[in-house]
Image 1 (cartoon, rainbow, N blue to C red):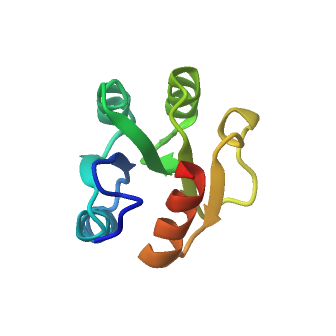
Image 2 (cartoon, rainbow, N blue to C red):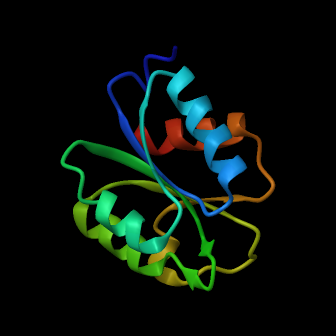
Length: 117
């Protein structure tokens, strides 16, 4: 358990089930509570959680990108990490810390700790 994540609610928006499960497991082992969403719509719904601390977002979710989610999280003042295989992301998502795919869960935890600091 890591004191940086204890009591934190982290939103994971990822459309690849195995990646999402592995990341959620890593976050829970670090002490975080995890909300998981496989779609943009579900991510937008969970982004309204009153205790949300931060998010890790896959940039492309099926045929959609996560720009609306980046905008909503920014409006709420919730920091986020973009986990993407794309070299360029729109300006609305560049407020977040960008971690290129593939990344280890440890690298994503480090990025998350950085935005929560």
